[in-house]
Image 1: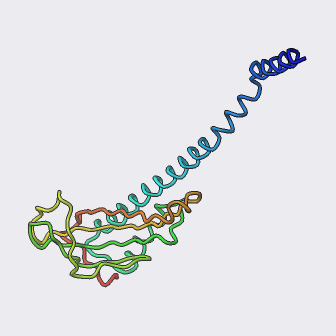
Image 2: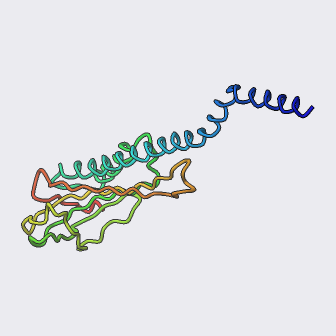
Length: 189
């Protein structure tokens, strides 16, 4: 009787060993969380990089537009700052801060001061406030004007918010004025 029981158990175990029908389901159940994390993380990363690219483009746009004027009035400045919202489309520009300023070098050692500053949804730079130029521009002669475009975009990931919270994407760029040595603000700000 014991011998028959052992043979029966062996037969059942052989049946389990030879049956591979459920292996795929088990493997899929083990791999599914990793696959979903990878997919959703990739989507979030792609969205964040797209917004960073749009923020860079918006900063370049406002600085480029202002650099094409000899002087800017309040209406023109409002339109230029508003152009940044168009650039970040299809993403929302509701909380995006856009600032454009003119900075003038004070000497050949990389320091400059703010000549004027305008903003949309942010805090403008204080007139006369110091600004440190990037290394490549630190040898500019005194009195050289540059247009500084800045964009701060508060990016809130739709799925990863719990892990990261809101990420402030900041981009800035500098342009030389094109039509004259500097751009007058004509009380635009």
